[in-house]
Length: 447
Image (cartoon, rainbow, N blue to C red; front, side, top):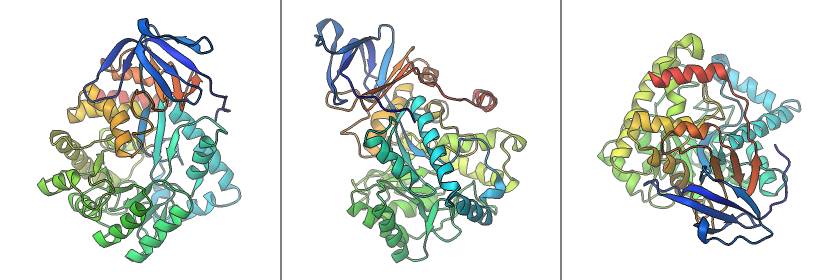
């Protein structure tokens, strides 16, 4: 991760500023003044702004400034190259977990997690929520960034997700249990290790499915998940649930989860639970559809993705449900956020912008609505909207400087000119891209 530099006061002048609301409100010829504590202290027309002499001036004439992206569903253990199906079996996961927790594996894991967080930041993502870690490596990274020892994205770290024995994510990235008491205990274990996010495997998943129909099959009861939510909510921590079927989504919402990851087609009961959820931390729940994680497996041939026949069959069912769910949620004006499920097959750490593009192409969002979902909307969903997510006085300066207008072309988000994270500029951001994979995705999403 880039060595951190002391903050300095600066001003971005003569920019076109997208504030992050769903209407796409844009302020022309505007100056943003950032203080040495990393907060936005002034937003005003450039012709009416007085900049203190000690402040560094950055001329943004002809450029667009917007809030940094927030990716609400990431994993940091891999880079998005196709995962080996043999490693997704329970036996494969046990072997991999043993290696990752070994004296040799731990430094390797730390290095990989750090590199992937750096890639996310360099691609314009200034806040991430991890949802399934091998251990507590993301917690440690979060603390190094927060302590000012390095520059990186703001991190909400989940630690291992919570699952049943041999359930989704287990044992590689999960703590497992059989009873509601086990689930409550494992939640406390994670909280004691300092996590500020919790994830539940409410249903089976595509990646580690070993039989047809396993993806989306419920793996926890309402009581199991309620035990998790009660403990997490008492600590003020929101809970995410991997849920890929109508029944899995229904159970998770009844238990009080705050975000549904992936999702499925909605019915009037689940729509109402999203709007008014008495057991959720804030009385409502949101959907994070992760289209980036499902569509490649169904649009690209199996020889390219490397997935099994069973994974493909499960993916087709799950993706159909995800597309229906986000379409329903958009029509019903539910809260929808942006997460990509980075590290999964064909989900790189640097392509968050593609999820916004997919919301427009596949779910009827406007570009402004997609940008809002990835900024101000995600900040509200993750309960950090008092800190970040929009260009407002008093918020932390998490900003992107772009050469064009993403409201007209979301591909502009692919290559930010300048990234400002917590008031610290990241100059000349670059990422290592997988050109072969990007070309395949470009073609698949264009067709």
